[in-house]
Image (tube, rainbow, N blue to C red):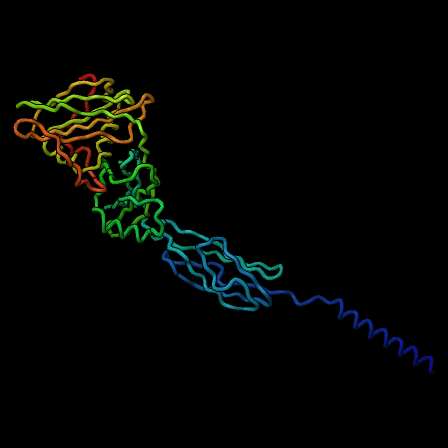
Amino acid sequence: MKNFLYVIFAVALSLGFAACGGDDDGDEPAMTLSVSPTSLSLLSGEGQSTTFQITCSGAWNASCSEDWVHLSARSGTGSTSVTVSSLSENSSSTARTAEITVTSGDQTATISISQEGGAAANCDVTPKDILVMADGLAFKIDYGSKVSYYYTGYLEANQGGWTDALIIETLKESFPRRDPDSDDIIAMSGMDPNTDYYIVTVGFTSQEKAGEVHRERVTTRRIPNNYPWVSVSNVRCNSTKFYWDTEMNGSTSKYYMLATSDAELVTAFSVVASSFVAYLIDEQVKDGDIVPWAQSSGFNTSRESNSLYVSTWGMDANSKWAPVINEGIWSVNNSAPQMRTSPFNLRDRVSILNRSALGEYRVYSVEE
């Protein structure tokens, strides 16, 4: 009987040990993780926000693929709500996207996020055919199909803090509103040589909604010690003509010249940037309409008023334009033309002139 009890006790012990061993080898409860919703959307402005819910049985971490997204929490334990917000405005005309990833152990959940574009589509105003001088520049513009009007100006590239909203506000306050015209030439003056600038442009729809703010980085040309220069001297006139002479410096291999005595054009050329005149000359050179002068010479044009405008623009031996043009205005005083001492002091920082609206002027060629 005693032996039978020992057997029962031994079996009981072995069953007890087996039960303990089963507890030691059992799996831990599985980690659970889910997010809701799995897609989010934001309006275009800075500081726009929404939330999503994390349901988790343990610790979790969250990250985002784009730095314009802010998460109110990036780690935690258990279930919680997380706020998602935009750190900047989406100023483009198209939506931008990002992905939020939440992990817990070997579990992963993702949320897609989209922020709508704030700019009007097909409302781009883009500079093209840019001519850069030392003291300014000139260009034409491509317009989106929805552009009703636009603004343009320039900023120094090293000036910080220029948000799209501030650029639009500054353009509206400082520069004239303009209707789109493919014949317009935009000329800018008052720039420093060898300096980085942004040409800034923005178009608006007929419903007053702005398109994307366009920034075009340019560097004005430097002025070397010796560069092509053609002076104008010995200006004289009779009742029907103006006459003058030109003289090239040693760095000039050839040059072009624009002249007019039309009163309206003389006034126009006195207030628009010199880069506008350079653009007119450059256009005709590229079109092959004129060939350059390669020597000092004498010229004349019909006298249509008591004023004469003449500009010269030289090239070096490598056919590179001078960084600036030479220009002057002469007015008849007591029958003799006198050069005005400061005819260009009222020039606008940004001038917009329509190429087809100009009257008669002459870009002189050796064939004349």
